[in-house]
Amino acid sequence: MALASRILSRSRQLYAGQIILQPENAVPVRFFAKEAAPPALKGDALGVLRKEKITIDPDDPAAVAQYAKVMKTVREKADLFSESQRIQYTIQTRTQGIPDARSYLLTLKEIRIKRGLTDDLGAESMMMDALEKVEKEIKKPLLRSDKKGMSLLMAEFDKINKKLGIKREDLPKYEEQLELKIAKAQLEELKKDALEAMETQKKREEFKDEEMVGVKSLDIRNFI
Image 1: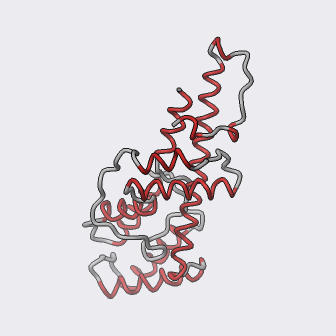
Image 2: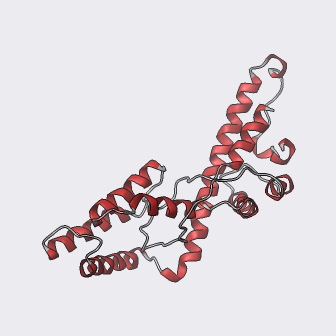
C-alpha cells in the first residue's frame, strides 16, 4: 500500500519539470484572470487513471506521450489548469504592478528558478541585452507605461524570436512540446519514488527474499 500511495500521489501532481520558460511575447499561453483551488481527483478524473495504462518509463517517447495524454484528460475531467497555464498565471500575478521592464524580467527569472525551470535557449540573457540596448537608446530606465520605449523593446524581442526560430503560429506545437517535457519529468519523479518505495519495502522482513520487480512492469491501475 505504501508503494501504491506514493505512486498515486505523484500521479496527481501537475508540476513543472525541466522546461523552457520564454517571455510572454515569445511563447504566449492562455490568460486566466483567476485560478481556482485544485479539486481532489474523483469521479470521472479518477476513472481515467483506473482505465488508462501508464508505463513508468521516462526514456520511452511512446510512454511519455501516453502519460501526457492521460494526464491531459485527467486535468480536463477535474477542471485543472495545465502547467503552462499555471506558469502564465504565476507570471501575471507576480508581475502585476511592476512599473519597470528590468524588474519585470528579473521577476521572470526568479519565477523560473523557483519553479526549477531551465532556460535552455539563453532567452533571458538575450532579453536583458535587448533591454540594455533600448535603455541606452532612450537614456533612462524603461518603464512598462512608456509605450514608445516598450515598442522598441518588443521589436528587439521579435528579433530574438526570429533568431531562436520561434513563431506565434507555432504556439500549439510549443505547448505540446512543453507538456511532453513536463510529462517526462513527472515520469522520472514517479520512477524515483517507485524505486525508493520498493527499496524500503524490500528491507521489511517479509519481503527480504523477494526479487524486486522492474518499475516499467508496474501497473498503477492495480493500486487505485
